[in-house]
Length: 289
Image (cartoon, rainbow, N blue to C red; front, side, top):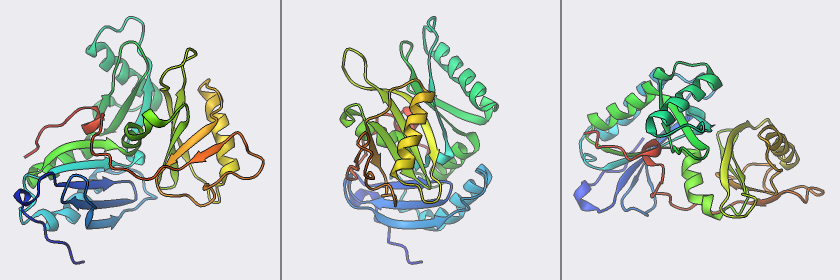
C-alpha cells in the first residue's frame, strides 16, 4: 500500500494525527490543518466477531502503524484517538446524597461499575464527568488498551491529546442542539443511544441514560421505534418524540415508515469535533513523548 509522505510538523500549524479504533477496524489519518480534510495513512480490518482482546489490539497497533511512524517525521504531532463504543463501557452514575468531593465520586463510580459488570475495576481505566449533585456519565476502557496507546505515543514521540469514545464526541457536538431529542450514534452494527430528559420547568435537556442497541439484519424504522419505547420504559423516561441519528446512513433507517408519526428523523451533516469537552476520556492528557 502506498502511503502519503508525512511532512515535517513545523511545516503546518495545527496539523494532527487522528486514530480511529473499533472492534472491527483501525484507521489513521493526517490532518495538515486543524479543519482540513483527512489524508488516509493506514486502514486495517480487524476480527470484529471475536471478544475484545487488548493484547491483539496492541499488536495490531504496533504492526500497522510502526512502518508509517518509524521515520520520525510525525514526532511532535498531536495524536487524537477516537474509540468505538464497542471497545469501552459507558454508564451513568447517580451520586449519593452525602457525596462531598472527588474521592466520593471516584468510589461510587467504581462501585457502580462492579455492580453493573462484575469485573475487577483495577483492570479498567475509569474516567468520568463527575458531579455531586446530578447523575453523570462514566467510561471504562481496558487498562491494557490504554497502555498500548500510551506506548504508541511514547515510542513515536507523539502528543496524545485526546482519547474519546465515539458517543462522547457526538454528544459534545450535538447536545446543545438536541431540543429534547434523543441522540443515536450509529457505528459497527449498533446504535449507542443517549437518552435525555427535559426538566419539568424547562431548560436544557440532561443525559439520563446510555444504552447500546445491536442492530439485527434487516432492522427498519418501526423496529427501532419499538426499541426506543422499551428503553424509555426501562429507564423511567417519556417516549422520545425525536431521535437524532449521527454516523453513516443505515439501510432501512433513513426515513420513518407510514403510520409512525411519533418518531421524526434528523440526520445531521458531519461536522469537525476538534474541541471536545471530554477530551482524553474526560480530561486533557499529557504529552506521552
